[in-house]
Image (cartoon, rainbow, N blue to C red; front, side):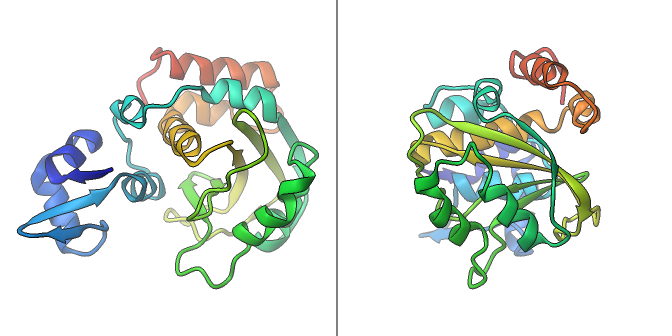
Amino acid sequence: MDLSVREAARLLSVFEASVYRWIKDGSLPAYRVGNQYRLNRVELQEWAATRGHRVSPVIFASNGASGSVTEALGRGGIHRGVGGTTRAEVLEMVTRLPEVPETDRELLHDLVLASESPAPPYLCIGRGIALPHPRAPLVSTVREPRLMLCFLESSVDFGAFDGEPVRTLFLLLSPSVHAHLHLLARLAYALHDDVLRQVLGPKQTAEAILDRIGIVERGGAQP
């Protein structure tokens, strides 16, 4: 669904003038339809996530999907000590996790390591967090969304906007593109919570991480 400048401003919680300024300086993707600008909802989510900009939770309802980050992470699990000293090595290791269905591994590998893509196949959310996210989200053989949280053995440069190397990486598998975009929006929103960012560490228990995500998703925090 295409968004008007007014709708985009509402989702970003900014004035319309700010959206126009970002469009005109070329930082925010937009399309001219007649005498009006239109924005793609997916590109807006990606743009906001890579710049650390919080998107209004209204976008969750607008996506028309159900499911929570807490439930998806419960299915995908938390993985510690993931190896690799380069982006390619880390992404290779992540696509080989036991929670990734064997039928999806080769396709996922090709998508997240695609070198010909004009944009990197991952989102760097900042503060040491990245999310492999192909431009054409993988429709997996999983029946329900599955989110894997990976703590890396070594910090790796992913070219994040804040210059910080990545220590924490999420991998999202979904049964449909719709479900993928819904969970991506919820995850990006939750990761603006300062307490959650502090809890996200290899020494924290799975219960502590899941509990904090649940609090944020229920609206008990102010990201």
